[in-house]
Every structure is written in C-alpha cells, then in structure tokens.
Length: 469
Ligand code: SAH
Ligand code: SF4
Ligand code: F3S
Image 1 (cartoon, protein in one colour):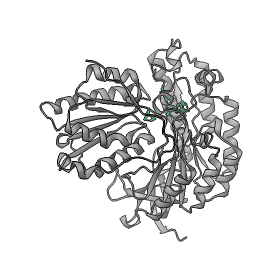
Image 2 (cartoon, helix red, strand yellow; image 1 turned 135 degrees about the horizontal axis):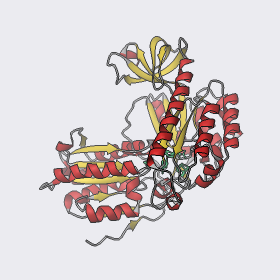
Image 3 (cartoon, rainbow, N blue to C red; image 1 turned 120 degrees about the horizontal axis):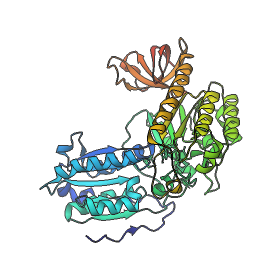
Image 4 (cartoon, rainbow, N blue to C red; image 1 turned 60 degrees about the vertical axis):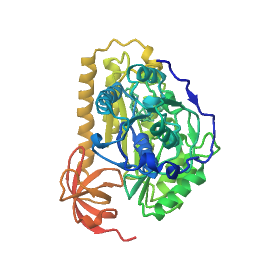
C-alpha cells in the first residue's frame, strides 16, 4: 500500500477558526448516526475531546456509550508512555472486528499518537481499515473529513501545523467547571518527553479571546475555570504577554475560582506569586513537577533547574501563599538512575511533603534524546523504586489531609459521588477531593463543608451551609 502524501496545512497564525456548519448539505449522510468517543491522556486531550464532541453533534450525530451501535468511533490518543500506545492498539483490534462488512462504521484516530510519523506508518501498514487520522493541530477539520468519508472511501492523513486556534466550540463535560486552553505546545524538550513532537512549539492564544471565553463561561453560570497549557506559566512569550498579567486579567472577570496547570519551575516568577496571593479568586493550589531530586538526572533530563533551586522555589511559594497545596510529578528509573540518584528524589519528597504526586516509571519514547541513553537498571529495580516512592508520597498526602479534620472548607460541588450515590462530591480550594453528605440541590454551588474523615486520596465531609457572597 502506498503512503499518501502528508497534507501539511500552512501556518495560519491567529486565524479565526474556519469551521463552517456543513450540516445542511449533508443531512442525508448523517441522519441518525451515532458516535463513540474514547479519550486517553492528559487534560489537553480531555478538553480536545470536548471540541470533538461539539463538532460531531453540530453535524447531527449523537453520542452512544455502546460501541456496537456506533457509526463513528473516535479514539483520542496519548503517546506519553508505552502503555498508552499498547492500550490503543488493543482497542483497535475490537474496532476492526466491529467494522467487518459495515460501510457505515468509520474509525477516527485523533490525538498525540497521530502526530508521530512512525505510528502513522505502523497504522497505514498494519491497520489499513482506519478511515481518518487527524492530528492535534487541526481538529476543526474533522467534520469536513468525516463528511468526505461518508461519501467516498479515502484515507486522509493530516499532519501538524503551528496554528493558534481561536473561537473553538466545546461540548463541555461539566456545567460548573471548565477547561480553557491558553497556549498550545511545548518548547522545553525534556529529554524523555514526546510532547514537543506531538503538540508542536509553544504558542499562546490572544489575551482578549481568553478573557472573552472566561467572561462567556461566567455568564453561563460556570464557577471555575482551569487555564490549560503544558507550561502555562510560559504563556505570552511569543506575543509579548506574560502569565502573571493574564492571571490578573482573568481574576478581574470576577469568576469565582481560577486554577491553572501545569506550572514549570523554570518559568515561575515572583510576579506570579504576587498576583496569586493578592487575588482571592486564584486558588491556592500549584502543580509543580520536579521529575527527579538528583541534579545529575535533572541535567540529563534537561529540566533547567537544580534540586536546590526547586526547593528554594517550593519554600517561596509556601511562604507567599498561605495554606497553599503543592503537588508534583516524579519519574523513577530514568536511564542509569543510580540508587543515590533515587535517594535524592526520596529526600526531596521528605523535604517538601507534597500534598500528592503522580509517579511514573520512565518509559522509552523513540525519537527523544533519552531513548539513545544507555540504561542498565532492571525493570524489577524500577518497580521496587516506584513502590518505595509511592509509600512515601502516600504517607505525606495522608498526613496533609489529616490536618483538615474537623475544619470547615469551601467546596465546589460538582456532582453525585461515584463511591456512594447518596453523597455528592467536590473540590476544596486546594484541589482536594471531598465526598460530602448533603442534598443534591447543592450541586453546582460553593458550600462550606465540615471535614469528618481523611484518607490519602479522598476526604469525607458534611454539608454545613451555602456560601453567602
Ligand atoms: N508539561 C508538564 C507535564 C507533561 S506530561 C510538565 O512538564 O510538567 C505529564 C508527566 O508525564 C510529566 O510531568 C512526567 O512526569 C511524565 N512523563 C513524561 N514523559 C514520560 C516518559 N517518557 N516516561 C515516564 N513518564 C513520563
Ligand atoms: Fe514534556 Fe518537559 Fe514539555 Fe512537560 S515541559 S511537556 S515534561 S517536554
Ligand atoms: Fe498524552 Fe499528548 Fe497529553 S502525549 S499526556 S495526550 S499532550
């Protein structure tokens, strides 16, 4: 099978999203069709899926949770670690089986894996039954591609461009809390990471369109926004803006809660701390990935800070923002990580006593510099280190949570608790999940909750009263 030419869209910086509602012309092709969507990966992908849903539903498709009755299956993929890749390949087997003898069953592969040339080749060779491969940069082309698919059988491959998309529509998963992309891509090139290759260079959205989006969300009744970017605090470098100025402007909209992920230690400024501590609607919660406590490993990871610089920043944040919660990301088993290197990581965890940490075993990603590094550490050793680390991380998460016992916390209630259908759940200002005994009528509200019990990953509480502003 010949590989089609990659259709590389031209750079269309800051051009308004060109999505046109094509529904009327194609009503017949799409009538009664259903889609099934599965999302892997980070918040970027979760939010991109909200855009995919909006596109498909504008075309007239409806969502189904039963893949067998779907006409369109969309897999929004992640490439960050090997197991993400394996999960998608496994799922494709099922799709292939369902597609047998069905012309009205289309498979769309979206997300970060679709931005990897080797993966595209693998798909074209081993999985030719896939109908559309669409990258992370041109999601708005999905309706057009899908309509073409239902009219004729062609495989189209779209690849990345360095666009900044404005004015996208989303079918948001929540009515109370919303993701707002403020920038795309990443320029940091940590040596282990695939993201700069799948999401392109750092590029910021226009400040005015971000503010307009937040204002619109506020008008619709949203209580909270989370500003999204691989390195949110690198916002604005390409357009003469700064993250702290953006934060100030978002705060002025008066939306009740503002969050942001992910902050890179290297881009953290004193001005940011000032703005966060001066504005009550910016939440006292920072996700600040450290990755490793060893200076040798940090250097080989190209993280651009030392253990000492991270600790200094950490304590500065703790001092400037009273009651702040800080979480982190840690990788164990980076190529040739020694026991001494790992102990430096344990030391940082002891010194910082994080509120929580996402911990990962290093996963080799072809095409990244770390993939070429020698690695003598066995899988068993890496797994043992992960377990040892997790024990310590959980100990401190628990310890921090216990401090909340019997305190009254402000919680934004988001829905019915998954654990117990008689309870509701929500998040404290510091991003701690609380299962609350209280009436369903408080869903969507910020309420006072008395904390009754605490564990590493969740906290129980009782509804006290609604907040009067
Ligand atoms: N931009 C963010 C997070 C990006 S991905 C940041 O820089 O902090 C989320 C996390 O996945 C990373 O923080 C890192 O801990 C982990 N990760 C990324 N690449 C990985 C790899 N190859 N193997 C294991 N974990 C990885
Ligand atoms: Fe990956 Fe590093 Fe960029 Fe985060 S900062 S997305 S870890 S390259
Ligand atoms: Fe995965 Fe892409 Fe996010 S690789 S972690 S979905 S940016």
